[in-house]
Length: 144
Image (cartoon, rainbow, N blue to C red; front, top):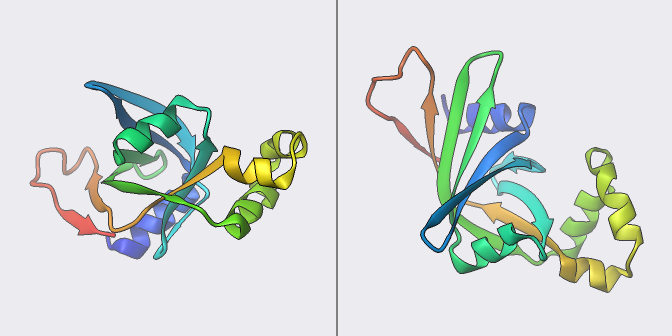
């Protein structure tokens, strides 16, 4: 797989698992990808969530995507950055796939929303593909 193939798999399978740490304890939860491309892997949360605090304290994470039809797992490790781009926050909140954000966003003014809505980007991650067929093969790391 090349970088484009990996981004395509992520965008077609937008539910992924995100691993963070809290102190010395790992934390994993399901997340919903906004998009993955050359600009990075972009997703979001609220600043009041434990996830946000965990990333602020340690931005090293791992993401795990899985294509159930092809039996391909993609794990990506790297460091998250917090994106302070209000136009991107508006784009995400208005996207048809993010209708679940509308009641939350409508409950506050724009400036409060911009402060409460955290967007993350993982750039230059390292991806590893896994399938049952290559379960015991050496890992092939792909720079994203």
